[in-house]
Image 1: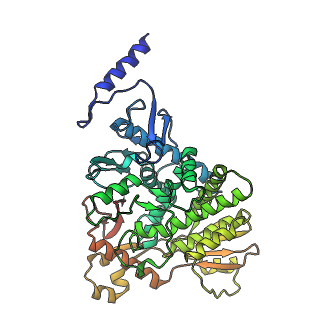
Image 2: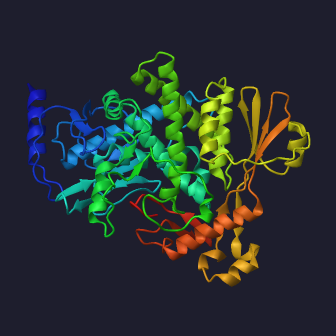
Length: 499
């Protein structure tokens, strides 16, 4: 009788709550939370899940009071964020553990407890700052409704992707190179894709929409539809065809980011991390779809084939990301690493992976002059540098792991003369690792590295962007800050269409 009274009292208390001026939403007495599998543009795709669970890593969602609250309320959104994050976190942790002998994941990159703010303020934005994930909201003046970033499973999972990549590769965090910045965004979009592929109803909806041809735009390939439409509605230069933030089915061919323009329409590839990320995330998506087709041809159902493809590519991506050398041409290095991971598991998808990366020019064609070197001779040449040895079944990767900090004004006097950018005088982290690949006989067959010219060009490009966009400092939009004469990243901001 006492427990019943306590429960009744709690329900009454919750009913009376009004947070930050929120209208009163009634608690229905249950502990389940409804949430969008996609976002409010597909209201038929809603899941319901018990809000009582233990997260794989500690998170704390502000205003999360458990289940039982009406869809669209502050409390429901806070609870939904916890559920969406834990769902993809749990999957990624399992996929990571099955990827081989990698370092153990037991905590977030720079905090013991990741704070989640489902309504962090008014902005077309969401971001990760190593301590928290923050999701904002804005008014779509055309549809006359408020768009909440936290209502989109794609947006929530994308931001979580930044946090998970930061756990795996904290050395990416402050490194100055366009492709490393872009990979953080690509990894976020791929995480959003993998999150969508957790739900049978969402997969079936995409299969029905495309009649099985998932290389056509679909509910899964279109990331953050409501936010993309809302952004377009409030933009000065409207694109009548825009129906999402990014679409993984769109094909882009690699060019060095430094050779691309700094601005342009959404349909154009530019030297901006969100835009350029589509080169890699789009290739990943196509490989996943082609592996799906491979398994359908073997007699699997489209749904089961998609799950197999999801699990294969998630495992390959995590294993490759954990070991890939930090280089200026990171996309090329990742494509080579994924090929090696597949080779180590029997090479079943070599032709598919190589064909996609080659067609999209991500896999850079080059001629290497290797002097019949073996693993012992290479170890002698890099004896002054720490390194890691990664086993890839019969093959091996020897990766140098020294971190390099430079000052561009001291390295190249021409740069300091031609530019008045004050950031050039700061110490910065740059990509400087080398990967040596050896066959079963311990003979060297491939090398991934960064030239001095590539390193300087990439770093200069980043610093010019940060200076012109005023993205260094203590203000809220700053991506980096200056600490003891060194440029350190503060946050990864996913402001739509911006840095």
